[in-house]
Image 1 (tube, rainbow, N blue to C red):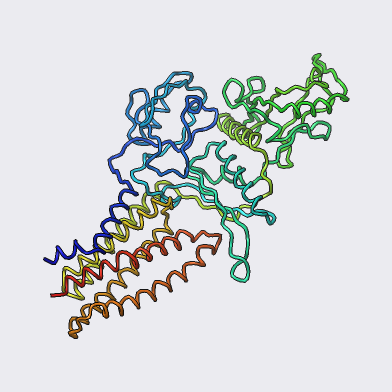
Image 2: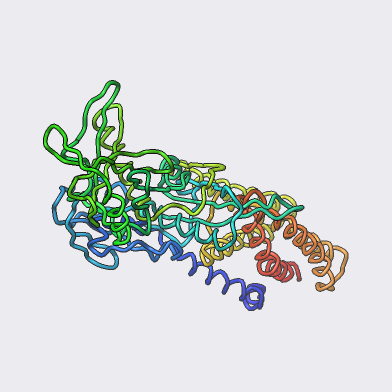
Length: 525
């Protein structure tokens, strides 16, 4: 009879519907296998085959998942890397995903950034999946339009470089007297190292090619095409690598296509230069092409005499890398080449920015955080249930409280999956706070209900009204306390504050009224 009353109650029905919608939003699938595509490098073999980078705001479960490569099943990221390492250059490979079949020719690199296929739509923050978070501050105060341009330029630069799962957001402090009013930009990148991010973002990336102290062309608008394929980019076959005292030096080169305007500008500068002849009979102009990146000279190139006054659009760019041995020097040179190519494609940032703070988390450490959080969460719920049972000596109250706590967590995760909110360590702390305040409120409800029963007060509305007066007071106090944390410290506590606000709101308006109704039915004989 009581079970029928419980499951026919409007509040319980509403909670069940909310739970079903939350589970649909989370879309759990623990049996899912494969690797999800996180990013596709431009001009790579994968990009030329038609594989597209996913929309970073799309739900994780909608990402394209690689299921096999050359008929070899890919169950996880280990299988993927074992297979990719065994692939031969210039071979044709077959990639099967959950959406399509791709046949591509492997050139220098496959160009895919991958991760284990997500098993739900819950987005994990960098604390849990590993990666780098950088807090940046513009060197000067910017308008909102300039901030938007800066963020768009950063996104393009990092995407061109091939970094995946990229989130860039503005996060300003409150204006005085409530805060500092400083402008900040938070960059979160999964699978990136601190060094990569610092090199790409700490520098403005102002590239200039000068002849006779005059700017011939710059990165960005003056560049129409930058070659990134092995046939026109890589270690320079003519200059190669050389051993020096204490290490090795390798030279890279790649070709670029200038805009017609930049080519005409270069022609105007070289038209008045003199021609010199070297001992080997080769003729060059008497001024070199000086490449300058962030006011530091990168390289000097001789200009052939045939280019005098000629509006040539196809030219070659070179630079070098130094390492402790030849293999290390090759890798440094290729990294420097990739970074320079990225800056030439995207141009310089509109303003110089400073790195305020950098945090890096290992993927293995993130996985340990998840396992520990789940274990502690379950242990805490069992401990609460035991304490409540000892306090009230009624198993039905303990079980109802546990069900309510689990419901709050599911609803909170479902809401996070629906709005695309990242669950990180700060958000987990917010979940614990929300569930903890829920237990306090449920104890208030239980005490008021059982107190009314002992005092023979059968006006259930009066008892619950007294309980919810206390609960609503605590709710508004919590929300008011959390609001400043959304903006404090450049918003780095935003996850904790927003998760706490959403969690206590779900509890106050959904789960705790339902708990009160169930307790009313269970204790009303």
